[in-house]
Length: 456
Image 1 (cartoon, helix red, strand yellow):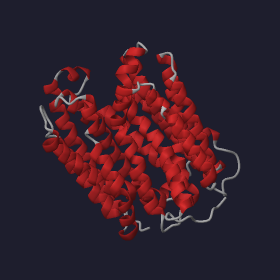
Image 2 (cartoon, rainbow, N blue to C red):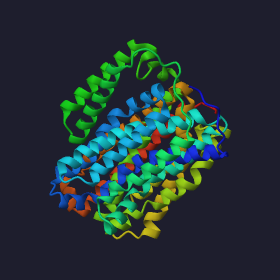
Image 3 (cartoon, one colour):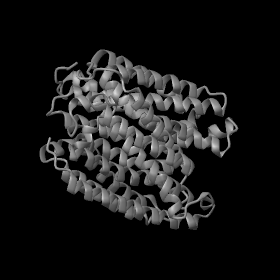
Image 4 (cartoon, rainbow, N blue to C red):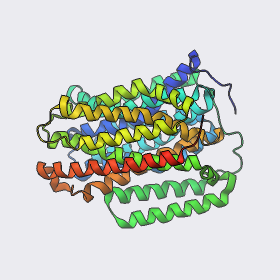
């Protein structure tokens, strides 16, 4: 099913953008906002540390494991339809989370939330790719990146406010009215689209292998257990073999990776999000453990990133359309890497205005210049009929990069559970981790410079 190209400046175009931003924003926000609520929900539900960990991990496991399937389902059965199913699913799971009487119920509901997120996240971007005209597409993606990406950044700030005012359960229940708004707008203003060339039997085996492989690998990384990581690697190798033999009917057509730019931009994504995953994980802890910030103040520290993403990302998307994504991406990644090196100077008694705000602002500038061109490159390097699966692959790569780095970097720099009780040790490890993140960004920038050659 094809749709008439929509202009971003039109009323219909603006409604489509609002719908996709709000929908994907729910899933992005939920990835960070819950962290602030963990101590409160843990006390009320009588949870141990393992229970709190699984409150986060259950969501990540199902989201990472099923996001490829979500993109493929949208391409085949209708991107708007699967997106709306994902929103409904996410809302119901959010209600279960907010009403959970026990830790076991909450963990199960969080896993269901991840399933909903896997359906709606790739669908939101695929709708933009399939709906907007080629000229307006990079600008629409830039706006989507800026508006949607702010959800993850404001999560700690919003979570702190909700917990302190109306209670931790509303961290989940706030998704319900938002979901209703998204569904109403989507039903009225978003056109349906799908891959008309999709035919034959659905790739059930490929879907199962992708989900199980990513889930096992993710579980192994989170629990630092070798057997699940080896099992996940073997299953994913089997997935590649199966997809190769499935040909055009594959869940992930192997031919999509024959495009050099698509492969390169996903490697860039892997290293970039690996570095960012560590920074987002450790910076707030550094501010609280070493610098003495309050929870709300530490969560507020990344607000400049949100504001800069909101303002600059649409212009970055337009710049990439005019000159190509190669230089905006490369320079933006390098600027972010420099910011990470600067963050290594944040230490005991750090003052926000002089020691935290400058590197955070520089990071925001670099990230704002990078995300929209990167996202546009992912979609432009794949055919329109594969928009959903291209988005799903890139999302899976980004989350895998973050999981790998968060699992590997802290132990390598000496950050173990006991380090949280030793501010001096934590501070030293934080400095080393920021240099490691800067190194990953340098690798990402080099790959961007060499491998990204596309023009929109």
